[in-house]
Length: 227
Image (cartoon, rainbow, N blue to C red; front, side, top):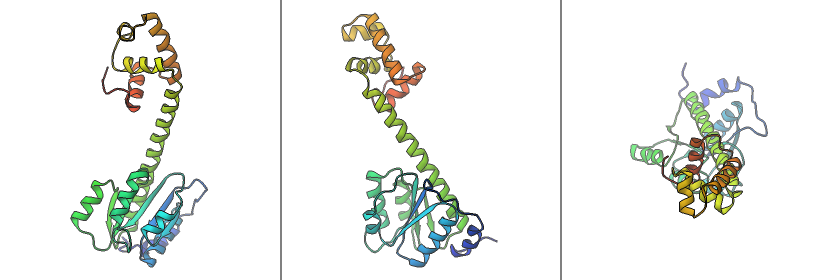
């Protein structure tokens, strides 16, 4: 039987053992309805995630950011800052925190605005608990993917920072498709010298193929040219 309210799903969720650890993803809840908020906390905890609930957007913003994968279940209509306004605020500095909107009386324009701004789901109360849990799983997955991409970029930037000024020039030119001889002509150095700079640059960047180097340069914003 499909549950028609969040509360009807609590018993089923509780049947699964909680697997909360220090590394467990955090599910933030911002909703001014205390009964709904507490029901969500119970369900999220039973599913093995770490719930943190707040009654207002301002209370959420005042809380210190938790490291690690996370998502936010956010009510559209809040007593202070609206859910849509909070979404805009989060987008400025916490893009790796996917948002699931919930509302008791949403409309199409509201949902369209939320989804265009990056929300992963827009659900109307009362909701099926399986739908909500699936949305949370997808959001946590998106958060993990975003965190992985950010880590990759940080690693690339650290490697790039280790290059000399000349190696950086060679990397940008080679990735844009110039041959060693052409790079030498542009920089006023010999082809042999270009090869030496290129070899050191490739080792420092840990590029295994030319295509790999081009991808790195593009991700670092060094060139928009394709070889």
